[in-house]
Length: 541
Image (cartoon, rainbow, N blue to C red; front, side):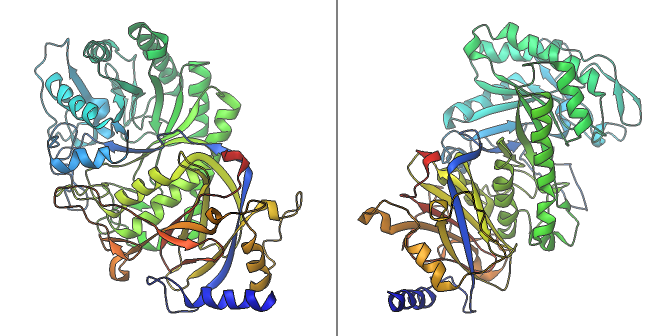
């Protein structure tokens, strides 16, 4: 038996897939604990945003928005609808920095004017306007594609600037009331309304006191309860759509009270500005990536202490602020950051994770000019299709540059594992293990490295007690950059470029089928989704 195991080990080492590195890989072990879930996401966890920025929005001598805003996006572009439909009910959040200066052209006497440059305006722009004909057309797209809509409401309407970035005064709810009423009258299904954008804590451009904000959120909740007559039709109320500040968020929950805010929303831009020359280094640094974990943990604790009725959402996350980083946010390297954030946030009961943007800036899932998918589009689509809402705990015997996340499989039996290799020089042979083969009540020594033969023995029996021909295979989806160029906009799936069909259709993203009792080979700076259909996970049954 010992000889057979060693022969199997040699076969595994010499039968690495064609995207594998020639360098000798290191050994690693991932132990998945399938007995209980540690967290749960919403069924529609993956979300993307559409912003308000006009073409004149520029940073670092670049103006990457073009015609990609809520007000001017080509809603009839053939690639757009197909890209949304591929997700089966993609959640789309309409909002962004300028949402608190948007007037809704319903029940008003003022002309509906677009945003224009204004030196003393918020973020350098005047007020803008959403016409109801445009709102009608947007909803035509959403209904055609099955999108789930989150709309960000103007929370500064009626307020006034006191000094610097501080805004005071009571929120004027009349325009929002008329807009919500119009939306209901047209039968447009808005799944959630978000109150304000980046007004919490120190604010970004403008800030509002938490107690004042809490009172206005309560008023908006009463409007929703009044206008949505049937209890089952009540949409969710989200707030505050800003950067997490524990004291401010706690005060918001305490002021608004039980059951008012359904989800606390926060934004994540943890990589720096679009002109930062160290973006790639940050993405590949596990210590740097781990800093974001504190925010997710603190958000979870704030809800547990002050608002158990609410959940946590990331309603905007671009990684790199100020339009994203060219040749980073729209390149393969960003999928390492993006998928790691999706995995990390899910461990702390984050229900929804909205990516800035679906299209627009340098961080769009779709290219702003061509509407062709950037690498992160395919990463988001694979997550959406493979990772279910049940989050499982794992232990790893591996260097920190190997990241691993495990979920119940999406709407099917088994689990899906996400593996990310941050090292640009070292590949890993990852042995997979179920915790039913680890002594109960005894935590494995993560520093102690057993021999490869011992780990392979465990891997052969890792599925547990079930035994059939169906247990002998797994599915693997390996993602890598074309020609090894981390800044490439072409992503390879199992060595094949991902490209749209001539008709704009999303390509088939088929796995390779691998023997379940062999280690998973993870090449340097690559990503793999591993689907284990017969994994014994009681939490997923």
